Image (tube, rainbow, N blue to C red; front, side, top):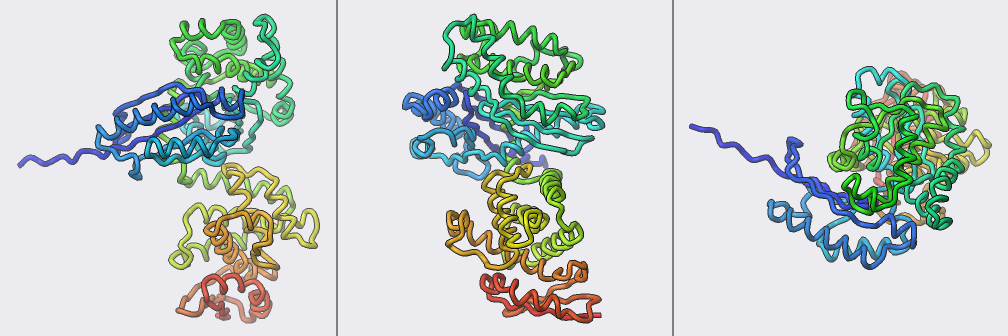
Length: 510
């Protein structure tokens, strides 16, 4: 009897991007079924008018309705979990962002998520990791990855396959393009002004990397990867700085009509190509890089493939995030032994009590970062160091976390001692009820872990838990007298008791 083959389920990803809306339909095996891309002028509107025009909104609605019709023909419901629709984080700069999103959702019957900086970083990270893994030997080098985006340029610096630093600079393709339009109409002057404007924005980037020893530089981005066949050698995916300069000068001197006809692209993409090339060229020249790598892969298709995965942190990505938090902790000269002990205990509590707190893996990551950093405020002063910790974290970069995530980490660290969360506290009071409860739950675990290492001597390295309907019993192995820990738990166990209704009892066990 012939076996019946079950057809693979289909999934779809749609990206409402800076200059186009793209859609990738694939099966569970990852095979592409359909790829669609239609141009739009979101970034042009946002940087020239600070809002999205009615004509652009109408165009976006029409494109999404067309994609929705194709999904329905293939038996895919746009509301299914296997369909993800995301929009560029540039929308945060549009004054009518909410109107735009609401119009899309109502007119096209879809749910749109706006990408935050944290997820955009994850997407770039996933692309970069794939590039490092696919290029033989490159993971043994120090590698700088540069992504020139519509609003910002991001850099990821890898030292032998591990992220050393992540930076974001307000040097963007459409920012540069708008600066040119605001200052010149004479084509003979705009070319040099574009280079001059970008170079004037590079001081911080140069200062960050001029003394770093890196052997490879990789440029990624929609525009530069689109032109990759014209820029690099087909055998090596590399080009020289002199060749990049020559190509950049040539294309920047072309008008939009010439670029459209020469590269067979739409006008919105044509507008972005000169500043994109100029940014990459200026960075390579400023850092005196003679050989540039540009991936041959299709930028937008790769992004769409990763969209289904990017909102879930992989093990390697989580490791990079916590390594970034640890670097910040060390800069603040924290007590490393105490930070590591509190972290180990807090994560143990999180994992053992997951049926009680019902928090997700992202909450575990926030707890991990907060425990490493909870005493970083002592770098400023021991007095009120929990508040100083909040300030330091809130105004620092942690690779892979959005600003909203960083704010949560800052709050969790703040609440490791003294007052539990209050509605009068800044940032906390602006969270919705669910997020406030999320912060309180995570902070309650940090407070317990910190109390268990009140002596800063890592005495409670081995603990076991026993949960009853009214009590969380914590058994302390190899501790004969837990007076210090029990005293600390009286003030720090209150938040856990208030949330979960459980008393905390400590038991010495030999």
